[in-house]
Structure formats: structure tokens, C-alpha cells
Image 1: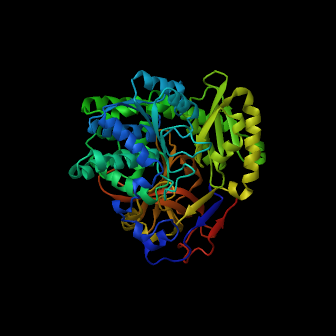
Image 2: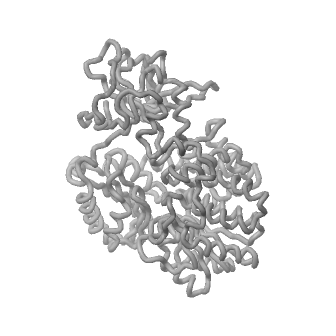
Image 3: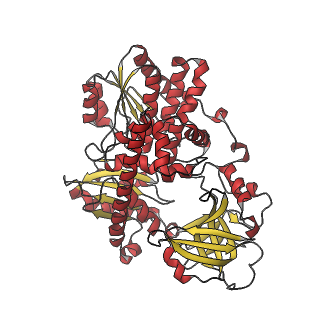
Length: 578
């Protein structure tokens, strides 16, 4: 039954103050919980920011045509929407170009520069891309077109010949926080521009109203929700709640986003996937239009279209995951510490999702490629686990690649079809030298052992002090041992989920997503050690606590009788690999 071989407890033993115990295992201090805008770093600490902002300001004041070149994911679309919003607000001439995932691929390329020139561009600004666009930026330079690059991806080669490159991850930048999303860097540029282009009286209000876009892009791009990202997202989620953008309001309705307060879960699971699906299956302009429309009817139609596309994406993802899993053999898992699979028909828009599934299911880095374009090249997407930097792995194999880029945990690339086998062997060899058998043991990071009497809404309120949750600040995960199972049943259209209830100072309901088949292995009255998150269930209009189960195991020597007392004696609890 247990799915994670290792449960690791961050806080051992009993706890006094629950908040202090939760903070003890995190890169988050008590003084950071309520930090406001004063905790943001000064924009001018970004290398080239002043130079880039001055060029954009000059273009605004001289009525030049500014073309913004974005990306097809939520971060790229929200970055584009944010900069266009500002340019429109200051009555500048701004246009947007977004790449098509299938015909353009990721990042600025020479055809994108030519499109900008066709629009009469006097200045081009890239957002969420550009750090690796050497060929395109050489063309722009030759054509006399200034380009300001606003990006956050790693610098993997020499800086391209742009007018200015604003990126906390360029090698010569000493900006104190490297985790900004593309939309966060774009917001920094607008902050700086607003000092000279907006009246002081409206500046604060206007910048606050942009934070909904910052929250969308930051949460969806899965950057660390620490440091100033925490500040931007915490205030940005409140901006989503009150947002006057008709498209965003309609998307919340179409996605059946829970009413009331908006948290990072709502962005990650309801809004983000529907904004992302535009660039996955059609054109990202759909999502950009939704974020920029001033008309509720247009917003409703666009939200409905994105909802339909998301259903199609889910089906493509299910089919791709099923096929990809079938390509992974036991022998392969024994021999290789990185998975690399190729599909003939997998849609470009879902290969990253397939890679995520393989990585989580088999707990190792996963690389998924597709030949769907039938043009002599393969396009790939990669996801990793702690302990292996995927961007470094691709850099090691860069001699086989036509392009690549990304982060430690996720990256994308393309390569000639004839180079696939050599690339695959080289990357697997590299992972084999970097990863140890311990890295490949799936482990569950648990905050602490929670007493049964604390499984209630009081604990939910305490953990809300730590919000927003996301990368490097995950939702608290608790362990309670010896809970008595009161009921279990399968739920969902196909019985794919498991609904349970435990006796814990009252009956406490719980759900374990995608584990409906386990219902036949459980018996009422059975005692179980349960690892779970706590959430508020508002389904019936009343806020009640719900356990969201991540793992569980029969309590050793405690099939009946009272729950065992005392605390866990070891920080690591090992189990047999299922």
C-alpha cells in the first residue's frame, strides 16, 4: 500500500507551538511571514535595468513602435500582457508577438525579428525569453533594430548582442534573488519605468493592479515561492480576487474555481492549466486576448474555449502517459538512472506533462521526445528530481542539440533525429555519474507528526500563515499514526479516487486522488499510519477540515486497539519498496 519507500520527518518529537515547529524545517523565518512591499529588492540592482528602461522610456516619449515578443506559456503570456498593459496605460504604440509552439518553437528566432520589422518596429522587447537568442539578435543588430531582453532563464553561452539584457541569472548579475519568474523581471522593469512615466499619486495603485498577472505567471512557472516571489504572489493573489479583468473573472467561473479567497492552489490547478493550454494545443494569443479583453462577453467565450481545450489536453495527456509508461521496462529501471523515451505521435503540447508523470512515477529524471512534426528533428521536454540538474545535463550533451534551455528541474530542447541515440546514451551516462541509488529512493518530506486532536480547522488556519505554497515552500505535510479507518469507498466517474474517514477526536474525512483501487485492500476498523495535507472543504458551503492523503501504511502491531502514543524516534522511517 505504501507508495514512498522513505518518509522523512523534518521536525522530530513533540511540538509546542505548531507554527514554530512548521517553520523549523523551512527556508522561511517568522519575520518573513508578513513582509510587505518594503521587502522587495530595488529594480536597479538588476544589471542593465537602467539602460534598458531608459531605452524603453525614450521609445515611449518619441512615439516609437514597440514590439513585445513573449512566450507561449503562462509566464510568457502574463509577462506580455503586463508590459502591453503598461505601454497602453502610458499611451505608447505597442504590439505583441507570441511564438507558435509548433511552427516557431521556443524563443526568439530570425523569423520573429522579421515579423517585428514588418510591423514597423523601432524597438523590440523580449519577455520570458531572449538570453539564448544569439542568431535572432545578430539579425536585429544588422537591421539596426534595438532589442531589450527581459528574461530569467539561465545563461548557457556568451551573451547575445542585444541593446540590454535584464536577467537576474546572467552570469555577471549580482541581483540578490535569482528565482524571479519572467513576469517578475518584467514587473521590475515596469516599476522602474513608472517612476518617470506615471504620476506619483497613481503609481502605487496602478502597480498593485498589475500584481494579478505577476501571481499567475510566477505560480504557474513553478519558481521558488520564497524571498520577493513570496511578497509578489501573496499580494498578487489578493489582486486576482479583486481583479477587474473581465477575462480573468470569466475564467474563474468557467474553471469552477472555488469561490472566495484565491490561493496558489487555485492558480496551479484551475487557472494556470487553462491559460497554458492555449499555447499547448492552439495559439497562445487566446490566453493573451483573455487577459487583455475589456468585454465580459468576449471573456466568457474565450474562457469557454480554453476550458474545451483543457479537456482535450487531459485526454491527450492520458493517452500519452499510458503509452510512455508502457515503454519503461523493469530492466531499464535497473540499468538506467534517467529515462529517455521517444514517441511518434505525442503532441508537442503534452510532452512536458508526460515527462512530469514519468519522473514522479518512477522517481528519476525523465526526458520525453516526439517525432510528431516529421521534419527530421525531434523536440524534447525534460523533468528532474532533487539531485540532478537537468539544464547541466543538457549542457553536457549540447553538441548533439540544435537548441536547449531551462532550469534545474525542467528544460526543453530539439535535436536532429539522427543524433538521438548518441544523445540518449550520453545523457544517461551523465545522469549515472551524478545520481546515487539514494537519489532514486522516492521520499516523502513530512513536516511533523500531528496529534489526532489537532486534525481540525485550527491547524488549517495556522498553516495559512505560511502561504503562498509552491516550489520550495510546499503545503505542510503531516503524519498521524494509528488512525482507525471508519469508512472507505471509491468516488469519481470511474471510481478512480479513494474517499475515506478516520476516527480522530471525531470523524475526519479524507481523499486520496487516483488511488480508488486501494479500497478493496482496506478494512474498516483497521489502524493506519497516514501522511496527509489538510485543506478546507467548502463543497457544501461550510468550511470543514479534509485530509488530502499522500501516503499510508498499516500501523505495525496495531491492527486494533488505541493509537500508539509518543513521537517518532527517527527522522527517517524506511519501508520496503512496493
